[in-house]
Length: 140
Length: 355
Figure (tube, chains in turn purple, brown):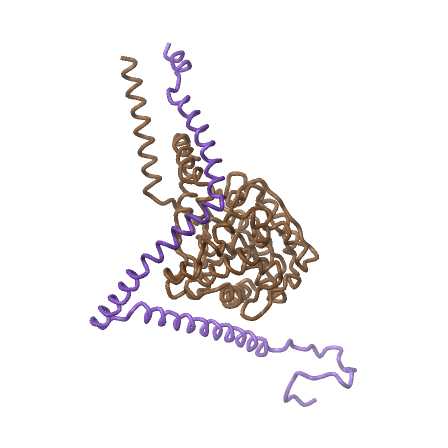
């Protein structure tokens, strides 16, 4: 009885969901057309431009007041901190380049320091006259 | 009595759904979990090497460097265990590196493509070569990362770049009628210099709004309706949570780079016209000789296919391929079908060229 009831139970929100999805699909297409229009581009551009123009004096006044306040407290301004950060970045870059050069030097040094392979003298009594001997200091 | 029990049950289900919904809206999912180590930093940029899981003798000798966009976290490449491109490629035997650009501060407002391609990338690549022990490498650029990697590959073709993979690359801006962003940022409507003078860097909120406004109903309404409908499905919920965590992690884009994107690319299409200059050097696409895979998302509304299609004839690569895949800008790499389509294709293409 309970299983039957469950099987026949109707989700009251199913119809609503269907209507909702249909409505949203229609709205979506309309909105996509709207945002792709020149009018929308013009309107948002104008809105942004007006906001920037109207807020500019407030932002400038705020910046000036902040710089004066920071000076009074002997604290660095944003510009000064930014300049410092830029110099740090340059330091980092130079350190990184030095690190790379050092790696290269260490690599070259390890190649030159690697002892040459020992040459076997067995069967070498009739060696070619131009053959180089790697045994420095040894007299034949 | 049965009706009361049913009502009580319905109320419990509703309460559970509301709790889950609240959790998703107020917490962050753990993403970017594939083990990695930090091997290099410069300013905010970090180079990571993912811990290999395949023995060295079975690994591809040519390392792979992943480069994502400048205004989003690269964790989209490593979203969650079992659904991570990085995890997939590491498991397939690649020595994978990721260049995370970091979050630009006010002091970085002057950073341009010039700095990213000629200061940061060469140094990161130099470190990668030192760590991997291989003079050659592969590079994957996605979205704005594809612009950066293309510029680098054209300016420094002899630096060891063997393979270049471009995903949803916004390179060709000639079809302005099809590009909503081009319309919005037209010089008649959008004063980029005024915006950057006010904010320094381009605010992340504005970039996020721009991306979402392309499909406003989907992004602001339908997305949440679909979530509500699937709150009973734990897999769907966790997938949504991870993606939403990434989407909502917004931050600014360096002002100089943003200005180049709008003026040099969106308005004047300088890269495709052969007029783009990076630190005085002309970016000549014909100098790009690496093997090239250009992945195009057919359902991409952020970077429509027309922005990548005409690119191949302009490069000097003898080995170049276009791979078109169903899906959106992010979906082709992070969606549910990515592991069946895009990832295996990238793997098979790259494996043949990484020996």
